[in-house]
Image (tube, rainbow over all chains, first blue to last red; front, side, top):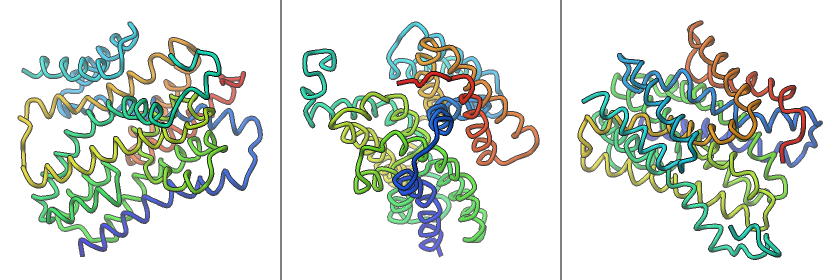
Amino acid sequence: MIFWIIAGMAVVTMLPRLIPAFIVDKLQFRDWVNRWLNAIPYAALGALIFPGVLTVIPDRPHIGLIGGLVAVVLAAIGLNVILVVVGGIAAVFFLTL
Amino acid sequence: MEGETFTGKRTATSADMVKRGIAAGFPIMLGYLPIALTYGVLAKQAGMSILELTMMSVVVFAGASQLMAANMIAVGAGALEIIIATFVLNFRHFVMSLSFMNRLRTVSLRWKGPMSLGLTDETFAVTALHTKEAKQEKGALFYTAIILTAYAAWVFGSFLGGVLGEVIPEQLSQSMGIALYAMFIGLLTPSVKKEWRVGLVAVTAMLINALCVQLGMSTGWAIVLGTVFGGMSGIFLLKEERK
């Protein structure tokens, strides 16, 4: 039973990842499609950050929000991503003490 | 860095590219470990063996859906139900993979194919914001190193969670829940500083995503719609080709 769950999950996760590798080899995209695809990373980051960040501590959304804002400030002053991550963790840690 | 020197691209050796890839993948490792450990613990409690829960990480490599599956197995959900829910949750990787693969047109399908299997929200975010390597000679190695760093952390962390149980104190592990969000923010912010319109694209996607969640849509579809339609605002906002 578990084996089939794992196998099925693997297939439905692989296909959406793999199919685009074949698609882009076959097709040339128009300019606007390329512009769209180049904007996807920024859109994806936006969609992954919010509103998900509010659920870090599920019953206290403001903690995730503050942790996120701390990360924005640290990143804005030019710190390395690793330090931004550590700073975010520290902020949430102290807020939940 | 070396890239600026005379004959820039050629001076980067394979070993350099791999090293830089591991460094770029390190924040993902930091973010994955606590989640992988949590997954390992939950999957074990759900009745999966160490082999099963590690194998799931090896062949699925998709954090959110594995945590969901562990929960569903624990409550006795059916296999088909779990597989369909996984598909819905992970369909967003189709859009991301399309964007990533379009950037790697110069890389052969023999490389691109296996690489696409290592695409997650996090590996996509990191690879997609390191665009200049796509045009460099050994660029594929750089991206592969990022992916393998993340993959190793995920698989090893799951195994460890299954074997050791709760190793990280609860207080710390819940604080580490912000790690991947902080990484996404740490990646996005410098791009916004460079080009404010990028921020508009991201905010558009956030609002669409939040609206979809408000309307009761599942997380998976909400992120897909936020990414697809948020990205469309880029067609108008990011007029000039961003090299």
